[in-house]
Length: 410
Image (tube, rainbow, N blue to C red; front, side):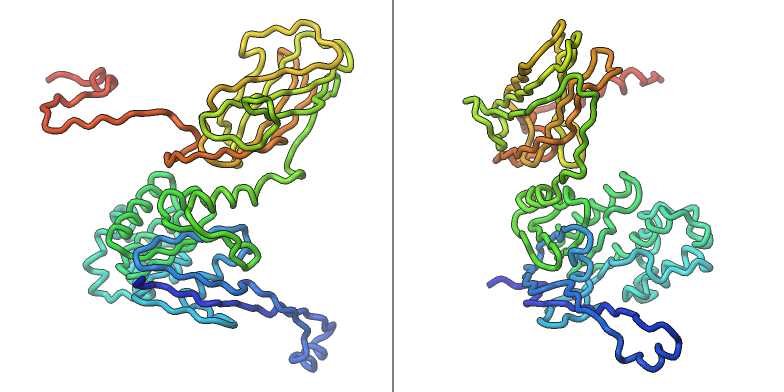
């Protein structure tokens, strides 16, 4: 029988949004209890059970109810209807450095902040050196916090909070703190907590991170659950829901030559918007030259939802010279064995002069398609690879050529 660390049973949360219509202090006093308000349901009928040892990610756009849900789980707020049941001790990382006082030193704030999180002085004494080392604050721990940079402040707050050894760890956005190296160190600490069998619930806008460390993901939208399941499936659904709308597309150009239409074709020359990793794709760009154009260049790019380019090329890079182009026609790019992994991608197409001084027509991120894959690798692209393991064989430790080149004898 499954044992749950957190049970969120059919909860809803309503806030009253008051409207201040009074025009004078006298009216404010006389009609204080008669102010009008509207009901705002931040969450509606949320039902989630989190088994012990699970890492649950919660994603969604701003205002979807993610942080409200965490505050209900930690009993900072209480639901309007329904109930939350927790089994075990909880540490909540909802605001890093909450309780830090600028006129105290870093050392003093460690003890103060830890006490807010439930530490005794004896507990902090045992962990103090590890906290300081993790935060990389050895040189600054006895300086006043008011002199810290925002990065130092955040690192110290996270180091204190992550030192708690709870049964349930609840995190709101704090894995985005610090530089890339510090974020990696934070993730490694989270992985240690996972290996210890602890339960983790966290909210993040970095949805790709959920694919790396979560076992399940829930997506909220306007206070209701719209999707839950395996991280990759929910993240892909999220990307589609957040897909660039028409207002974010861009189109420009002189229109001396213009794109009449773009078709994404499969191996059978059928127009489609879904492909599997390893399939071929044809990008057919129909054009019309409204006047004779000397040696135009046709190109395209394939970007993911964040704007990262997976691939792009054009006729000039392929060594083609088109001469003088008149009238209508099409240019087709045949892509062999698409290497992209699962996700939503967007095709941009452009026609410009050979020296790129004139853009005739550019349609940016106009043509979406979905990639499907049963490959579990991570990243944008699939690179076929083999792994060889040789056991019980004496080996000579190889060195990177750069290491050998910079090695000095003696």
